[in-house]
Amino acid sequence: MSQKQILIIDDDEDLSFIISEMLDSYGYGVTCAQNSEKAFELLSENTFHLILLDINLPDTTGFDIGGDDYLPKPYSMKELLSRINALIRRTYGFSEREKNVTFGNITVNITSRTVTKNGENVSLSLREFDLLAYLCEHKNTAVPKEKLLSEVWGAFSMVEPSTLTVHIRWLREKLEDDPAEPQFIKTVYKVGYMLEVKE
Image (cartoon, rainbow, N blue to C red; front, side):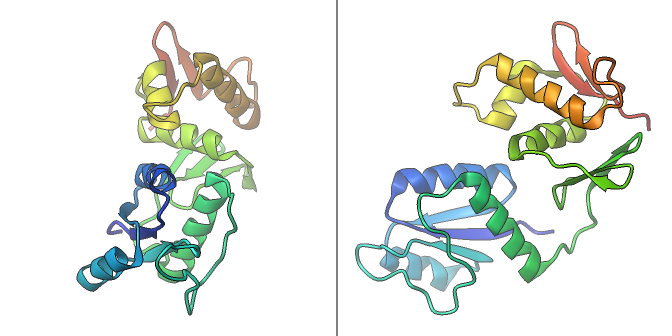
């Protein structure tokens, strides 16, 4: 799938930056405009797959004819991402081959962000899935704790290492038959963690 392009039209530069960083980390291309003039300029020169539009722009109304969804502020990043993924999926589908990683009785579909164990859906939080997906994409490789914290929580986040430990424990409790003796999500002594997948 070619990268989906998103245009954010919002005069709140801090919020736009936060949203941009999140969407970029999920593989979207992001462009920002702080006003309608810049937005129209960008729209005349580029193709965007989705527009995030603030309804309270200083120079014009953001109420858009033909809008697909509306999310009142303040909203959580998790909810915003969920809405964006749903709209993209509904509008464009997944033209690429779905990306699956299977280990034991567990299948992780990175494309649709779903996990099943013995054919049953496993409910994961946004961060739990991000962590699992990162381990899947680096399967059979010992990933340092610092790398996981930086890649999953963000390079500038002030997250304690214990937060990673807790999320690993939660994943094991949801996925491993015996969380105390994990088959798949292994601790690598003095390094970090590894998803062990038998090829």
